[in-house]
Image (cartoon, rainbow, N blue to C red; front, side, top):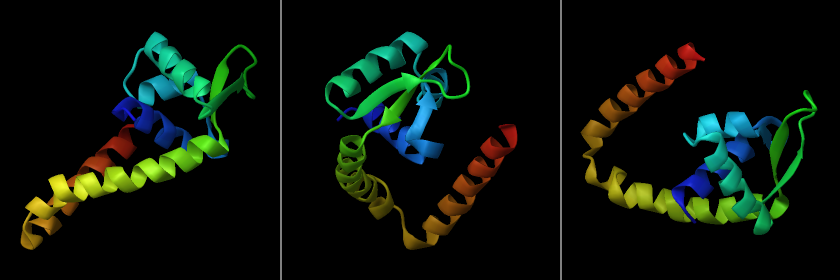
Length: 115
């Protein structure tokens, strides 16, 4: 699974109703609208997402995470999190983890303030 695939499935899993407008999904995973369309086409062909008309605006379309997509994401998450642990967290001294946590907390607070 590519990082873009994983990112798209994760964004959908965290969204209300497990659905997002295509434009919001593109913004969340840093793809162009045409790039996210191609990505969703592939994920839809694999049965991981579906498409539906936007509930709030009939002109737009939404990507919707399927049950198979959620199961696939859960499986991929285990591998993803093991990789983060092995490649990053295991290489940081315990004393430094608190510093990293505070720094990333500041980033999250800053990003949340912008939205």
